[in-house]
Length: 467
Figure 1 (spheres, rainbow, N blue to C red):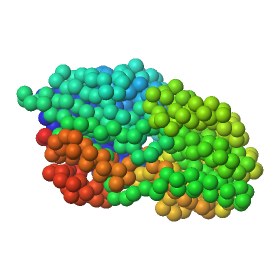
Figure 2 (figure 1 turned 30 degrees about the vertical axis):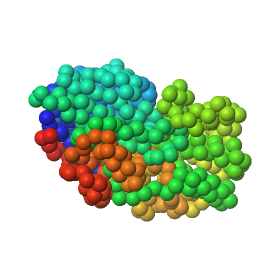
Figure 3 (figure 1 turned 30 degrees about the horizontal axis):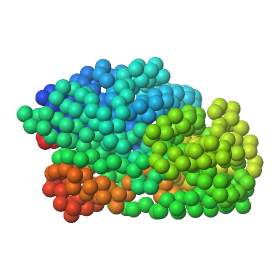
Figure 4 (figure 1 turned 60 degrees about the vertical axis):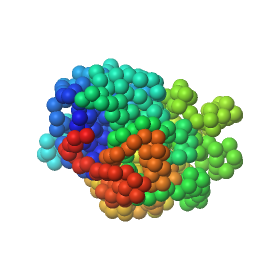
């Protein structure tokens, strides 16, 4: 049996791992690589393996860095099923359509500029037609319900607590007459994440493919998240500017809205307008509403007791559906909060808000999630100025900050706890660390060795291992 690592290996994006047993191949995730645009476009378009050789895909969750390159896989010749939970199916279907539309919209804008300077226009990675073909291949499976993606392999999904529908994957593999249990952690949720249940430990693990995004640091408390939001909104009201929060449409936006709703219900929210400017976030919030089976007890109670009957909406909150609604925000002269995607500022309506307001000293940019290297979000967070948006460069005069406690990923303490409990309930002899930059991966590897894991590997893109 072999493990092949083609994405989120030595980096945090583009999750893509292949388990090969007797010539049959299961792919774990098929995500978009995000980073320098030229490099990202090459990696995402030119798959380094024969797509037709993949027998099945098992998808841990819907985030684009885990699901976003499925249409490219199908364009390249994959014809098998894509297994996931029902909430992941619903979310990924909507997110992939949004990804295709954003590519078309952004390239239209960029190519207009490229033609003016005599450059060749770019082509989209995939289209909505490709996405519809992908959606037809989704097969939804409930948590803890066994299924066989290929003969000789039985899988189960376990709640990962990272986002709606997210899962860790247990693969029971019959190899040369013996059975081994491989566990793919997916993205491990942060303890105490609102709305979602806590991550569930998978018992019996022997080989673990584990994420390590925050392997070298711990988060601020989640109480601090609400305090930072409250403080930032108060500053926004006082200086008459805009508070812009780049947030992933799935998970992060709903958590921020949920926390703002708590502030509103407690009478702690200043009289300021709050806008969610992302059609995807609007649709995703509707998907959240129809999947309460993923909620924790606190969220279920809030759903029952909220005076509006909706913890994802309150009177000062407005969802912007159309382009017209989004453009109208440029005319808002009063203080306002704008929550918009994408979370790493690599596409979507957030780019227009940044372009219009980055140069204003009264603007605050408050990041609510991890920013991958070379993304626009990372550049702004690290103080780079000017920054490139739509092929042009803009000075940054805005105040920039980050809410660490809002992360949907487990921190170092949470990751080591998850690994320790997994080892206690299994016989873990080898761990492969993925979805992490070099420094956090090395730090987490040292922690795992201190806990008694015999062998810890940090695979790089293109590496294969016999297990």
